[in-house]
Length: 281
Length: 253
Image (spheres, rainbow over the protein chains, first blue to last red):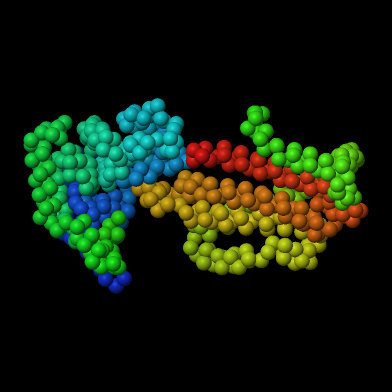
């Protein structure tokens, strides 16, 4: 089993340069994540949650503050941190098996035989044994996302980052994959950070739910989810926590509404709000 | 290819045209000196094939075509990949490339024949040039079209530069590279015949044969030559399509 890491984010600030203006995207984010913990991050669009994940995976490296993995400052991308994007981002010219093997391309710890075994294991983990030789165009959206999860896990990373991984799927597939993800998390025992705008998903999966607010992106509140797993979405306690998270949103000026008024009042959407939003995506 | 009714549908039009051709000549509706009857084309074809010159001229044309195509497409893929990968190369070579592209291919012939005469070297260079442009252009666009999302995946899995090219950029660009090669193959064949028409030499070749037919007012020979040229072009096209389909199964088309 993989070693799970402590992830510490200390006083993280991040700006985007728009012309000669500097737009704050993240402001003073501090968060300490225990090994093997599942943390959900929710927030409306423009709150910088995707930017935060980009910094954690290392695709962005301009920031102030510290991001420490087991006490060591992270530098760029690394095989110890895996990510699943909203789109599956599989290579269409590779089969399921070959796509998963991309995760191990630069793994120097495993022998060729161990790699083959690990790939098979992960194909089974995500339940795609019969589709090992299928091409992505032959898979449904949910299946493709499961391949992407296997590709991210095959390296046995210490942290798995999930950027709205089920956002583009239908409700049934989403519920099913949330359950699957929970099973995988329990089996692998690694740290997972899930960014989502689906409050129910955040509460269902998270040990804690981090609520972020936009402009600039800040942590508004961290809510503990002290419910045994597997959680029942319709239970009173579950609903109460969900309500609690949703109340945090009610306090914040609603981004979506704000944006719609902005665009209807002002035909030319050339305001800084929209620019900031566009940058977050 | 299995022979079924669907595949035969495409043969209806040519057969109908052949029938009309036969009918109008047999009924004397046209001047048979200008529009020669099909059976006479067959006679000439038979004589010509029997004399052995025919295979020789096909061979000569194919040699020019394929050597030119090989040179031009290798150069095209190389330049296309280089321009696609490096902004510097694109800025340095791109403008010249785009300007030279505007020169009609046939406008190169006077220069080429001044340098190299009218022999095989000149013809092959011309064929190479005509294959070069579509291959280079499509390769460039394919390489440049690699998605940012997939480049991020490559960074996440710590691809080396070599892996980036062989595992992501080339396969991702392969549909467009193959389109370029396919076009290049067709252009090369047209250029081969064009070169044989315009760079008249003592050598043999399908284009030479047709031109000689014109000189001798041998319309049967001209028609036979044209049919052969078309047939070979069609075979090239067919082979290229099959290779493309085989290599691009992953697109599920």
